[in-house]
Length: 266
Ligand SMILES: Nc1ncnc2c1ncn2[C@@H]1O[C@H](COP(=O)(O)OP(=O)(O)OP(=O)(O)O)[C@@H](O)[C@H]1O
Image (cartoon, rainbow, N blue to C red; front, side):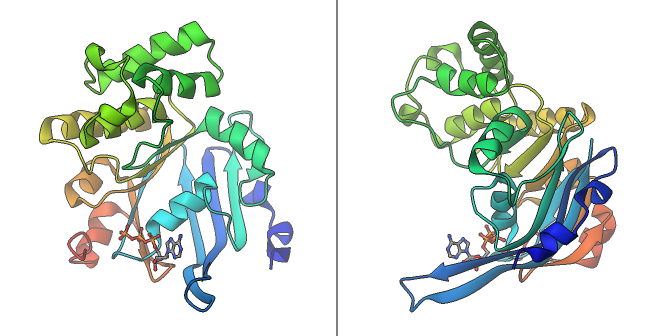
């Protein structure tokens, strides 16, 4: 199944300035509890994200948007295809086939992933959770703690909450801690899966501003937002995914206009 990957010249697919090139990506899920039935979640996805570009994935529920983000972050192993990343050193790697350890190192240093859920050890203080993301990006501990303080202030997490364990936080606070960790320093590639879904209007606006600012610093962003307003505010390109395939790819206003009901199809 993977011969195609080796035939593909990822160097060519990732010219200078391009951060991500997904080629022919498929992902099957085998449901062992349902007679081993296979769900074909992604059926050959191609997309690219340039430096300083914000590509928003849109499409109906179950289309494969989150699966695509998780394949790029390597939470899921792909079934076939390539996920080329041009790293900050200019090296081109295939996230789909890299050894786990190399992916783990690269994730810490170059790829931020913010989902709607905070996944952290229950007994770890908030400031430590965020500082750890800084250490993974290569900061010294002291520098990481300082950067964590800045990142937590930026998302409006009160200093009184920094020493407490994440389990006692509200859903919106957890989401903001997650955003602080994912953006402690600008990653090369930022993956966002509904990062503002639990936020109140004031925090939502400040987080959207923060995301807009990161793109302006050259971060390549690939996102899923269920709210059309956020897509219109942030995206430089929209890719519509339907039934595990790319159905449209282009200017946000044109794509959204041509796909009425996209954001309300849920
Ligand atoms: N771990 C899994 N095991 C089995 N099937 C899965 C798994 N994760 C996703 N799927 C299936 O893959 C398909 C795509 O799901 P995915 O969550 O990527 O869609 P989505 O576009 O992000 O949907 P939503 O907008 O509702 O979050 C769905 O049919 C889903 O049931």
